[in-house]
Image (cartoon, rainbow, N blue to C red; front, top):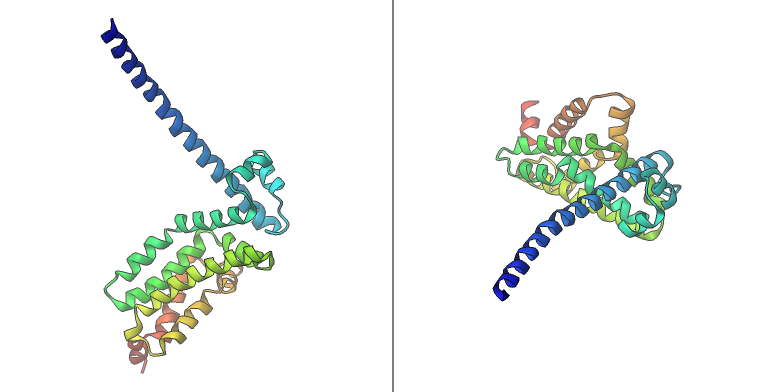
Length: 223
C-alpha cells in the first residue's frame, strides 16, 4: 500500500508539472504581448502628438489596458521610449547588419555597406528618429537616455568608417564627421519623406557620395 501511495504521488507530481509548464509559458507570452501592445500604442501617440504631450493614461487607453498595467510593465514613459528604440533596432537587424558589414573583405563594399546600414535603420521606422529628435527638450533623464542612444549609433557609424581608414583620402575623424552629417535625420527626411525618393535611391546616393568624398580609389579614377 505504501509503495502504491508513493507511486501515485509521483504520478500526480508529474501531471502537475505538465499542467504548470504550459500555463507558465502562456503567461510569459501574454506578458510579452501586453508589453509589445503598450510600446506600439506609445509609439503611435509619440509620433502623432509628441513625446512630452503624451500621458501614460493616453498610452493605456490606446493600448486597451489599465494605467496600473502600464506602470507595472514599464514604470514610466522613459522606459517605454527605451523599449521602442530597442524594438526598432531589432526590427532593422542593425547589430547583425553592422557585424556582417565589418566582416566584408573589400573596403569599398564596407563603405557602401555603411551607407546601407544607415538606410536600413531609417527606412525600417523613421518615426522613431522623429520621436527621439522631439524628445530632446524633455527632462534630464530623458535627454540622458537619448544621448546614450545617439552615442551607440555614432559609435557603430564610427567603427564602420574606421574599417576603411587605410583607403580614406581625408583624416579619419573628418571622414567620420562627414558620415554623421549625412546621418542627420533632416537629410533622410528631405530626400525620402518630402522628396519621395525610395529607400533604394537614398542608399545608392549615399553610397556613391561617400565613395566620392572619402575613398582614394574613386578620387584616382576621376582624375
